[in-house]
Amino acid sequence: MFSAERSRSRASSAFGLLALIFHASVRNIRKGHGNAMLGLVMNVVQTLILVAVFWVISHIFGQRGQIRGDPILFVMSGIFMFMTHSKTMGAVSGAEGPTSSMMLHAPMNTIIAIAAAALSTLYIQILSICFVLFFYHAIVSPITIHEPVGALAMLLVSWASGIGIGMIFLAAKPWSPDLIGIIVKVYMRANMIASGKMFVANNTPSRILQWFDWNPLFHTIDQGRGFIFLNYNPHNSSISYPVWIAAATIVLGLMGEFFTRKHISASWSARG
Image 1 (cartoon, rainbow, N blue to C red):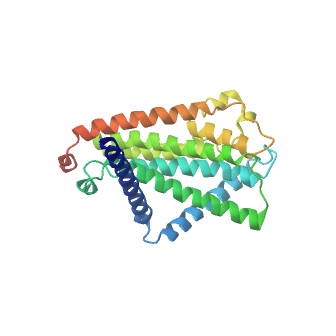
Image 2: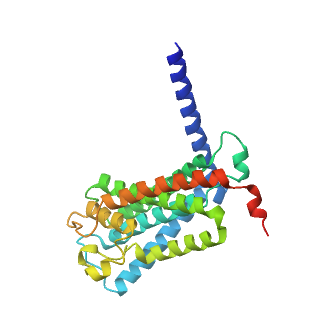
Image 3: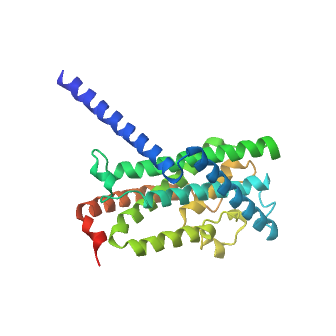
């Protein structure tokens, strides 16, 4: 009898936690725009602008035709994973910390805030990707994704690595908010190039690859293109590397967040 009661209690607690994460995610989606649909439209527009800009760049520098397949899909594959990683990292690093007024309302905590930031970003990104791909397929040119499950898996790994890196920044931010804010912006700007989304790794010399292969996003983009395009088999990237990086950064982020939560004080922000 007691075992059944404990089981129901755990199930009730888990359901309550999931409900709280759901409501916090909805709040995050509506935080930037009062209308959730407007937020989705703005994200789609941003995606289309980046695709157009990098398509023009690839056309100018002769990057077309390096993979047999739709060149626009080649550009979109990199942009989708780049935006998912970068926006997730930005949302998680900017999530509400231990001194936020929201933390005064039990059972709200920083883990729920992190989960809500990550899930709301993934939701918006997947909706935006589906919207862009559907209209491109229906209006411009039919597209075929060779292994959609594998491509989605690489998108999720990009998302997970964004969570891990964002959690590290979030844990470090209370100790030096201005410095960490600058580092986050530098990282996001550097990833415009360091992600290697405009390069085909198989055709890139090793002396250039060494500037990119440290970046987990470079690996997920290249491996994702291996799943998207039938005639592309990536040789200079790995699936396991970004997975391990994502796992390691999430664990380090959890440890850092726990340490910061135990030592942080609301009076820190009042110094000076």
